[in-house]
Image (cartoon, rainbow, N blue to C red; front, side):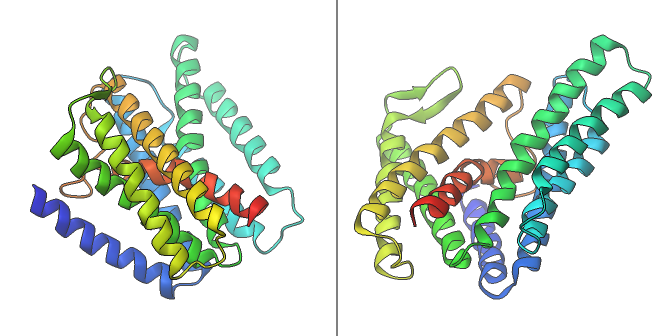
Length: 269
């Protein structure tokens, strides 16, 4: 299992880094939009495992539609695309609920779960495209993945070797405080390495602040994903990535960290 996990990480990470490094914004958006479609399918499949009703097909399509907003906004920044798209999504789901022959006791939860999936998966992941569209966007994406995934690795090994005190036993019994601290330290080291090598636009305070912020929100994203999986009684979000589980299992930290880095970069960098 451990070897499979490493092989998957090397192959998948290598392909992703190649797309980020040599692809343009369109290529990057295509990868993100495919990831959003897969993530939504995983999310609605998990919901179905607990017999939660969803509007799966409209949810996947409207979630993909929302992923278009950052890409189109990069070319037509003056258009109120987000306002329009969110309104369209809400009205479309309500209309779909009216046209289907489900009872109110089923359609209201279906609307709630479907809309939550769109916001949780599509809108959070769409911040990757927003981040890529910024000046130095490629470097910021590299930085994000380096810090978050270094934190994941640090938390995994620190928790495995030193972990004795549970972090959130009701949500994820295997996660420990020692693992969380190890993840924070690893993220800080990765942030410093990025600052000293390929991302000098970070100030001396930025690499510290971002290292801490991204480490914390990434671990919160991991816990939120664990909460959802425990709530629907599944171990992994899917089976797409051998040794890792589903795509959401691998991107849970990135989903929460991407918005933080994007808004930090917009305001403070």
